[in-house]
Length: 147
Image (tube, rainbow, N blue to C red; front, side):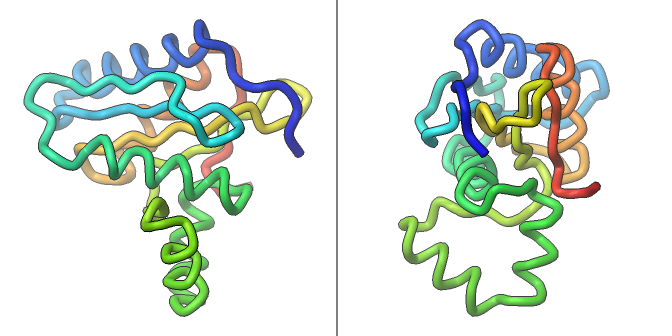
C-alpha cells in the first residue's frame, strides 16, 4: 500500500548515513539511490572510486522492490524459483530490476511504502546493511524481504 512519498530530508539522511556506514566498515565505495514511491530518483550519491555502472545497479535494486512490493531478499528467492517470470519482468521494465540484497523498501511507521533504497558496491549483504542503517537513521522502517 502506498500513501505519501519519502521526503527529500529523509532521502538525504538515508543516502548520507548509508555511505558513512559503508566507509566506517571499510566496504568498497558505494553508490546509494533513494527512489520515491513513484520510482523517481529523489537522491543519488556515489562515493569517490565507485565503479562505472553502480548508479544503474542501485536504481535496479530499488526499482525492483517498488515494482514487486517486497525487498531484495524476497526478489532473489523468487528469481531463483521463477526465472522465466523475472526475465519477463525485467524486459517489461527495460532492465530496471536487479533481484538481490541491497534493494530495500522504505515504509513509514504505519506500514505504508514511501520509497525504496538501492545500495551497491560491496557484497550484496553489506550493501543491504548500509541501506537498513540509513533507513533506520531517518526514523523509517526497512523491509528487506524477510519477515
